[in-house]
Length: 236
Image (cartoon, rainbow, N blue to C red; front, side, top):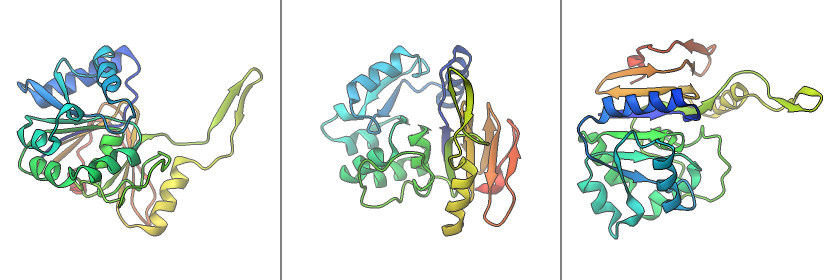
């Protein structure tokens, strides 16, 4: 199985360059990527934005929403790229179109899968560790299960501080660590908190952390910080 899972945060030229380098190394000579834009409302605008911001890695993006038969599009695709946005909206669309099974089948058979933000949540067993509001209700929170652990994209540690004219003020809201601790009060699955700009790459039974640090949460254990370049094969 081949996966490239990113947190997001590609807002600087350096990070855009890093993303492109990782995509080209991962996808190689693939010509077209089947792009899944269901996590945002305006699908055509999403595809245009990805190209404009150079988040396509130089590949042709083929929006799945433009296909009359999206299941056939998945079966015929060379590779698939699932974009970010709202994870509940994304998962609802995939259930409605009966796409979860065919995507899982193709990826398990070797088709390269790339997910960013919501697309990374989708690769987890469930979307329970998303940061998104449940703006719609999918039939289930169960996702693709391409990895046996949860991902929390856009992870950061520490308290929120709000900036105004007088400086920075502590927000006192729950931290991301608090939220993941709550998840482990009800669930046993490990969680990888993936920093902005960070990526996980799976090649068979090898799993590498690329670009940025991450934090690993296991139920009943203290969180463990992971350096960029770490091998995380034991999570598979």
